[in-house]
Image (cartoon, rainbow, N blue to C red; front, side, top):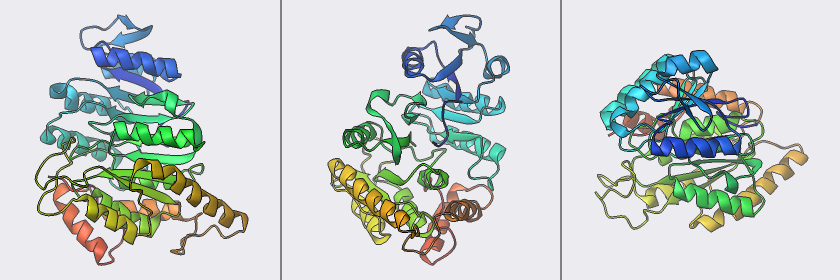
Length: 362
């Protein structure tokens, strides 16, 4: 099994005739993804790599029955591309483009959330990104820029803010024979369509995912909220890694737009401490991750063999996915307004349900 994409994914490439869109469309086709069409206004009726090009997403969906879209449109127009895909009925929208203005992303985020409904956390449409590498389900489909040759099918779900370091960790997992159900890059912008809690909920509900690797980075409080969510709602073993930033100076942006320590919060040390307090092992360097995951997988399988597949917090592995989804929906209220995120996090510390506000928006 997998989350979000599989062999039934029918993909559109928005911006397919541009440099990046053309190159990565070819790579996705070569991997075996069903790329059924591309979209570039004004170039409808042409082809790229044998794929028909349409003037609009609506025309492409009508002709190809596409259910997924990946966006390589330049930053000034990428938010409009998200809106267009959502209006056309695309179920999964993956925005690779970086440099989107925060205000533009906020509008696209609420557009997608409004169509899905705030009380339907596992539903569609869903936005992944922007400023992300996309995702891959090994052996079935890849959507984005992740290198397919480093992935193999297996029991480990991977979710990360980082792009390049994700590839490093996945390669190390693969070298140790630890295959992946789905590798998901959620992006490092201040506002993203799918965050850690969304991904954890999806992996918890996936029957084939037996363990999860979570890679965060400095800035914001998404990792701290994820740690609380894991403690309360995730029955599967999780290994965390905070991507670099351990010596980052306060107030300085480090790579991603969201990777900035502000007001004395968002440091790597705080995030690692939050995971450790929640009982989540934290790797100090990427090469430690495969060993930690292998050990936790062995423990889980031993418990299952002995008929005690229950986490230390007492949650049944069978009922936890539904409980997590309910907590996610209830804790986020109607639309997960950015200004409410700090209150959600504070409520979690006091024992309020869910501890599952989304990433703090700035």
